[in-house]
Length: 129
Image 1: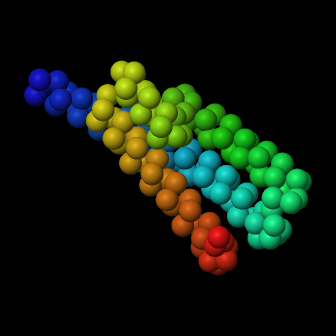
Image 2: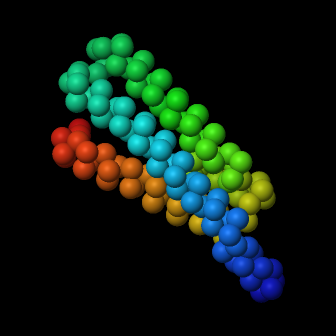
């Protein structure tokens, strides 16, 4: 049991694994940046976003293209999870090990947090609800 865990942890720090963690970080950053950024910009341009259908469509299109680009970037490297819930499903299904899933989650959460901080910086703190 201990050698199996040691082998899984050794696999977690191999160069292909580190590359996949970085791909998840970048793809999650990109998706959150486009999704939240489109919502923030729509909110800043139109105070009542729900009454303007064009801003809702533009936000939805930006989010869908952001998700497409994020999955496209990371699909060959890490599987393109982008979402921690997808990573959880892969871990439960046995497609990835639990130690690898923890590193995926860490990179995904750090990528999304950094994207929100960058958006907060770019909007000069005006992106408040």
